[in-house]
Image 1: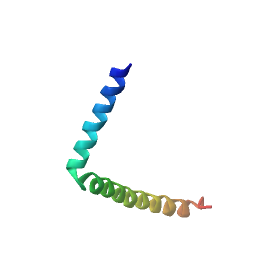
Image 2: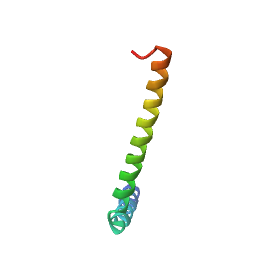
Image 3: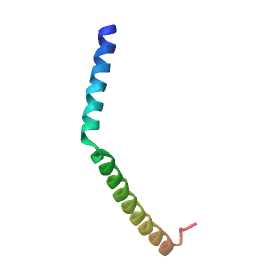
Length: 59
């Protein structure tokens, strides 16, 4: 059991060392994906609201 836990610990340590080596790249990529997703979502929501306003189903 101890070998399994230590193996998981070593894997997490290696993964986090790669993330620290990458610097700000993961944070920047994550922020860009969130920003583009927000713009896409708001664009689609505007289309749905216009369509609902035309159909008279906008509450």
